[in-house]
Amino acid sequence: MVRHARSTAQQTESTMTDREARAARNQQKSLEAFLQQKARFDAMVAELQQMSADHFGADPEDVLWGKAATLEHWNSRLASVTDCYFKRGEFAE
Image (cartoon, rainbow, N blue to C red; front, side, top):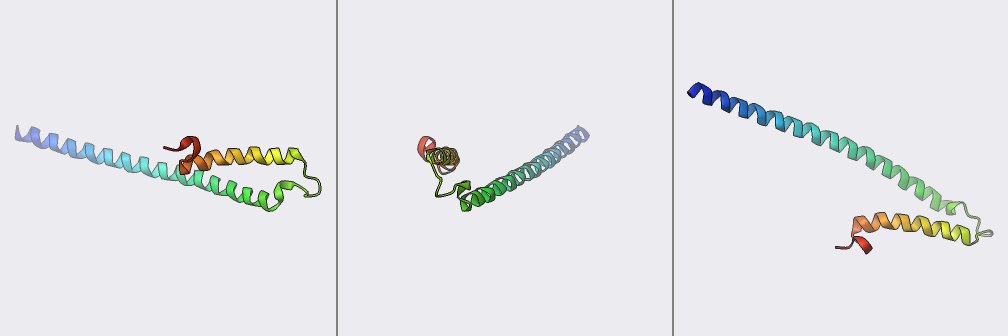
């Protein structure tokens, strides 16, 4: 009986170690995926800054309503992202 109890305790310890190891691997993979997506996000932010510095390719002498409407559309899409993160608008709690 003592031998069986010891064996069960060792199995439980081994299982906990296996679970902990799986949890650590899962956390590491999650972190890698997160950092990959953050790098993608940062690259897009840099491109947005470049677009803005270039006035979105618009010549001030030739800007018509179409350019303004396009920029309004892009702003609304970006606003949904920032509103979600900062819990504003439809995402407010």
